Length: 274
Image 1 (cartoon, rainbow, N blue to C red):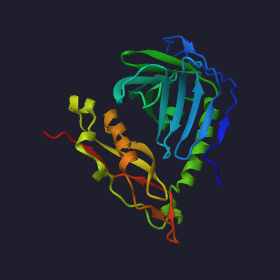
Image 2: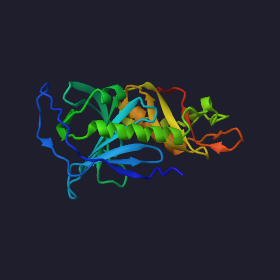
Image 3: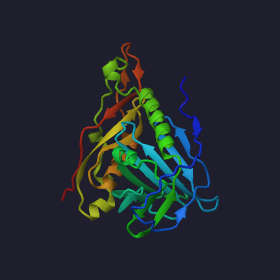
Image 4: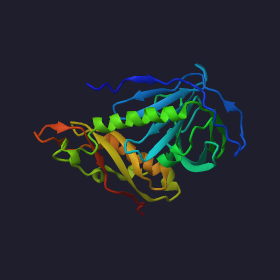
């Protein structure tokens, strides 16, 4: 049986790919550990430590299972907002700024605040073999992480993603692994009180769509943004609500047995009502 809990340690061979296009704005942070790729049941996540036991600073890379986007995640030992707040920011691998909205929040029962940037898979792969990445956040000091082994890291994540797709029977309707698709309508589970306070304050509206992983019992095990609304707080709340409340009639194989599957939601429209 495929073990999705396997951890893969990547060699930290140095790669020479310095760029002189963009000056380094802040001191470059050096890693204090190796890249670790976690083959999780519902995600592939690479992490590397840049901090100490008393002052944690972690860089994470998480590809979406549909190969369209990457999340770049910074986790650090600072106090952050309880509810996700959106901020303007950018990502720079030394080849020019990639504008990216991000979410900042402190998960429950955690001492770490997360900064989640989302970029396209094209931008991630166009980074080449960078020796650093700079995250700029409006109202926060920039963070400059030294990088090594990025091409090898992306290959490991691609292999993990391929396994993840097979595990969740992505494309199973076409190759016969799935005879009946999962059924359900997530639009019915949303409530007026789910509207994020920040989006309400700024009178922000939008339309979004998600890519889901649904298990044999119809429970949602993974939620990924497929089409962004342009308002990160709405996108983040959509996944929170879906993971908490959504259930489906599970997909079934040719024998009628329930099986894991993927599911693309219909467009979810966020509208403020007077």
